[in-house]
Length: 197
Image 1 (cartoon, rainbow, N blue to C red):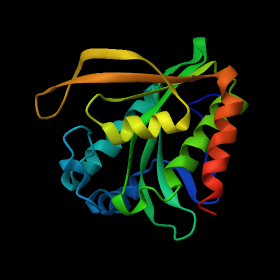
Image 2 (image 1 turned 30 degrees about the vertical axis):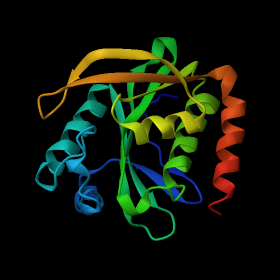
Image 3 (image 1 turned 60 degrees about the horizontal axis):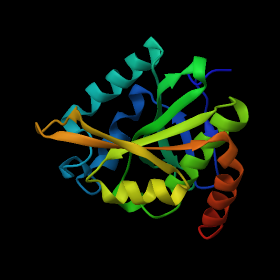
Image 4 (image 1 turned 90 degrees about the vertical axis):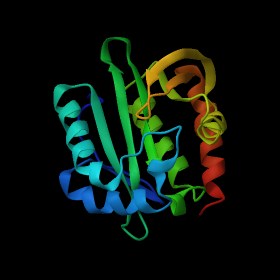
């Protein structure tokens, strides 16, 4: 098995499907829910950029460096956003979960927590990952808090790591969960999700 094999991951609140061109309109609607592209510390595509972003992620999947997913509400079928396996290092059994965004109305509903549980379960239990990373902008305090709530530990900060679309430099905070921590993290995520069921 491989991080790059397209799979659909099904939970009680959310389904993660391999990203496809036909998800375009739903992803545009999700991004418009909160005008997410206006957040200066993240990179959510504008509606007119969505098709190119879908094509870019699919091309990266085909080149073997990314496995992008569309998040869909298990209850309504509405598209909620995107999430991705990226920086895949098969030789060292490491992967990053990132490039994640969700419609504002889906935030704090448990769908993102369950998305992470689905991706982490596949990484650790099915693909024998040694470590799973998460990265975010130093200024993205909501994302940092969410990653820390998962149970990930901060590894460090990559200063002036990326050039953002607006020309500013991003300091990237790197977190990880290692295999020995996974049972406790899984139990914590399941407890948190119980409140949404």
